[in-house]
Length: 224
Length: 302
Image 1 (cartoon, rainbow over the protein chains, first blue to last red):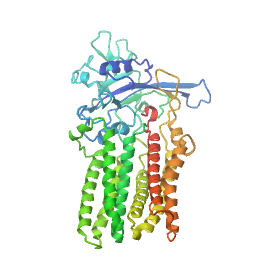
Image 2 (image 1 turned 90 degrees about the vertical axis):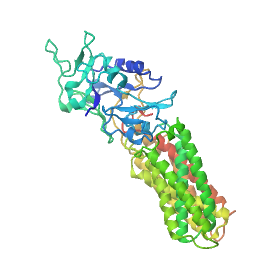
Image 3 (image 1 turned 45 degrees about the vertical axis):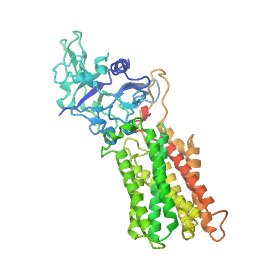
Image 4 (image 1 turned 120 degrees about the horizontal axis):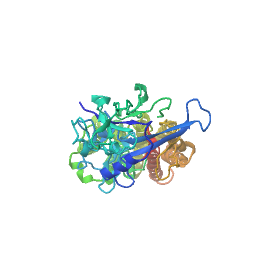
């Protein structure tokens, strides 16, 4: 089995919006639509704090969560929205009748009507690229553009069924090799700082079982 | 979320048609209202035709529905199948009605059949909106609301037809049914309104999204839902959904029921006002329904 998806290290995201721009450019996302967008959560008071400026915040890049049990697929009358074998949720634009019930059924507001084509669209995990990198030990530039463009090494793409070792990020200075989520650099520094299982979160679940994961290390508080 | 006018009219007219058909079933079981049946069937056909056309207007690519329509878990597919069954049922009712001669009573099975089909149509209409991602919609009260308004719409519609066709054996009884339907609708709408106003959404404290205005906060969804009782949307809810949609029809039905021996005006005028007000109330409630229909994660509500 395969379940492709993205892990985002929220401690590293600085909301540079490079991912948003790269997504728009790679997928020709219409003005006003966002297949990926960054929510700024906070500033909120830290745990136990009583007044400003004792605050904290984080940025949350949001896109389709490619859910295990996608509600958008369930409501689609024509089978245009499908859960594919690689675990991603995709839309067959030729089948879409533009009823927009999938937009209503999605808990996260990440589906948009393309008003020119009159069909619903959303993040495809850059299927046009990732399908070329399938099976490659080093995916190179065959990764979603948001991951490729991430300046802070916050976005990681891989197969959840293969474990964290499979997750790869942007390219190293050689322009060929990907950083890896679980990797020790020659100077013994970790690419991603250690985190525990209880520091990995998912978006609220409405029965859809979201796949995407977000790392937020304590003492910062995940808010949902 | 954005108000979907075509769907508002589709669901309203489907509920009206379902309510009328279920009401016809009850009249058949009671052995009454023979003159009402044919005009009621005509109204139901008109309602599903106009409602269906309205639903088509909502589709961006309606021509593609013949290109793979029928994903069996989809609420829209259920609605389409439900309406097809309803259309066939109307034809069956019509044929049985035509075969019964003179004052011969219609068979009881037809009454049970019409009642079940009417309730089924209302159910599939409501079920399409029972989405677990939208907590204000994902509640048994959604079905209670649809059945309550189906009750008042069906009763007021048949009452009106009773007045038009001068069906004296049902006129007062249907006025009484409209009064009770108005009361049931009133209770259902108010209870649903209070439940909606107290719906809880994800709370992340302060948050911002718009990159062109990085300090502009998005609206507070908990405040939006609360606004139907005491805020900016209270007029839509109290005056539109509660008063117009339930109280007017109920009071007019009660008035006609109590003044049965001394009728006021022509026999259908009060019923017509009751029906139009109940339809108007249905529109207002559905507008509220979309306004409060945010997802559990309401920060990018469209």
